[in-house]
Length: 166
Length: 102
Image (cartoon, rainbow over all chains, first blue to last red; front, side):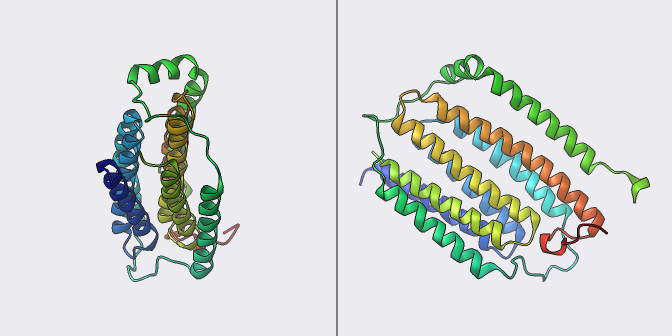
């Protein structure tokens, strides 16, 4: 086992355990923290895939902004009674469905003969990504900025205080 | 070198956990977190395929960047909706919001 493999399996275990914590934890704050662990582990996976830029974006946007936003939402929507259960009655069915999906996906992954390029994944320079983003993909990029603007305005309109409506 | 399949299996496990969370959780914020898990699983797939199979490697990265962008927009909007819901109904549990009109 090489060092890379050890690191990979460690990171994979962290991400899966974090994901498990998100979906089975009885405390919403622990669930949010587990999500942060998973997001950081996914960033580490991106580094193993030689995509440093994505790892950086993942840490900044997901582990930074999105996690804080989720924690704020948990804080603002805290229910009066803390004893209530976080899961609904269809938990056994949900577990069956998720396990069935996992079985199908893993069978598909194992049985498929994936094409592959020779050699290690090469490191991608930030310059090359910027070049691709602003030449080939400039139209989707601009549309994405529009999506963000619309989401921003929509969020403000939805969450804004309208006292006369109450 | 780590086989491509191992990345795909990690991604499949994360996706299944997300599916379980969406189906089993009551709290809308926790459901949103499970959706984030699924989006991350999809991104891992994109980047892994790009890194292992395609010499034109930017495509996977660009796709993942757009997934992250849309996920950020989605979280913002969904949290606004959840806050509005909580203000109107005093609850963030989706199974308690089963009326079309009140």
